[in-house]
Length: 223
Ligand code: TIU
Image 1 (cartoon, protein in one colour):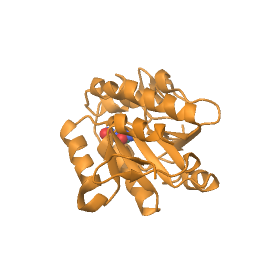
Image 2 (tube, protein in one colour):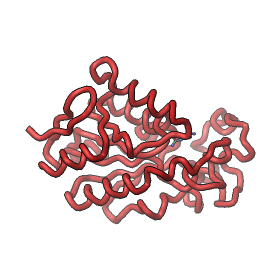
Image 3 (tube, protein in one colour):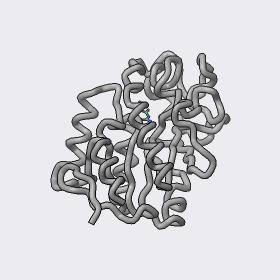
């Protein structure tokens, strides 16, 4: 049986059609100066290190015909899907809906809300706009996965302990077999990233698996 060498034990690979690559929130708002991440006081440059790795994984999945899902954290221009409590939190220089150098912060269609050019979705790839940290909350993600009979999810993106972990936990509760690709996810806080990797795999893989991209690519090459 095909598998990926992973923690805490090998991840069994299903047929390609049941697998999806999930790329969480690789949008300018989090990776470039002047967006939401920077407004919260973070050094956004450290997230950029994973871009080549995510690009390699994306290109491989495209070549193999694996389903690709991109997510974006964003809100409607009238903020009707943004809880006031979320907007108030952070107390940064700018908050959700305010106008910054890349347009309105975390608002659909604004320049800062675009996925970074290196990872621009291709026609046919699923793009999920999500108002929360988790990609299942108030989105059509469940239906998209069920329609395609997808059972296994490979996670990449930012930030590890916020939107990636929340989505992975939501997916775990829904019965998906989840693997987080270690060098394809990043946090503004390196300690939080390593703690999250440990949280996922502890207790016999309470949330799922983790593996480096080299092992993921080696496993996919055997399918
Ligand atoms: N602030 C932070 O670490 N993350 C977010 O607000 N959203 C995502 O993780 N995408």
